[in-house]
Image (cartoon, rainbow, N blue to C red; front, side, top):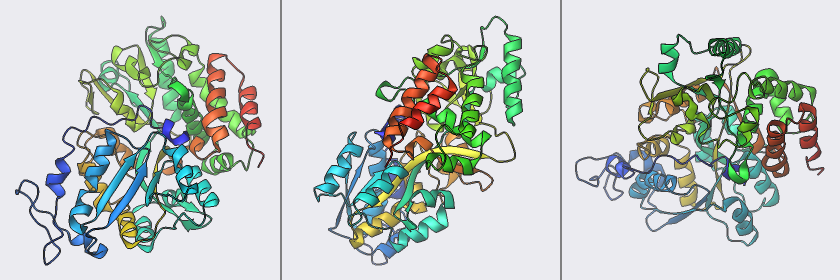
Length: 466
């Protein structure tokens, strides 16, 4: 459940207006020139020329299996409508909360879906290793689209043993700090641009509120069976900032031990915020309250005025109550997010996403895989998500279609060559580590004040020996 747990609380807003994409992008495959036909309401037409390369796929059916369930599932279905209308193909979509457990079962039984959306590169690698005769390398259309529209980092996470097997789908960015622009303006605080600025701001809040009525930070890592995962994100971000991307890569690959001195230094830096009683836990309690505070609600103190900052991904926007406005301009009941600063000239950004993996080389399947790696799909998906809460690292995505400001900021950073992207480390580690020991030991680190050394030693001991 390693990837599924990262989706806990990541429900986008209800699919209000989900059918919007039908009116905007509906097209007909029946025209002599392959061009647009009447839209659903007869008021708009769309060009099917981008779909001509796929040919006439009338009567063909492609099955898709994924962990993405409603309400996001409906937005996914709507994003396929241009492909279906322009090619004549039918997409059969199946979302399951048991995806990660059931996909290997289906592969073993000889009943694979045509396409699966795999939420972790580590899971992808294991599928290719365990089912080499079933997993189908990316066809040329996908290879070409990935080379043109995605960074080398993203392409690398879909690559196994030098072969591209999967193209990136959706994305998220985790290196963000949420705050209230109105509070910052009212009290003369400025958004920090460096790590030293961030610590200086935290210290300033402590000085301004010696009674502790406002804390610099609020945090929560409770997430049901997946409790602890937000703390792993904190450490991953800190490894990138204190040790760098190369060490990060060595760490998740276990080329250096989990308890390497460089990782110890990163955990100590994490503790300078999360285990500092002067810094946390605004409106929620002492340091130990982080372990029991629901991560979905932990940032609410920003609006209550009990805490200044909350580190969380772009998709945290879905957790604010109705009536809260996400925007950079100061406003009552308004929130925004800034990039978690680096400690040097590098600009690391932590994130995650899904990867389109194929188990059939039928022409219609290869065509749909190419579509999912194209700007046409990325733009259709953005149109199918009018309430926001989604973006892709596809640089062909029209940023004007991204309606939620922090999603737009995440897209800008993710597609900026000045930033170095790294995938969520726990999603790249073996399940016994990334989805078990890492979570649990980070909980003990906070709830029981377990030492930095013991925490890392325990996680290292859980690493599989083969």
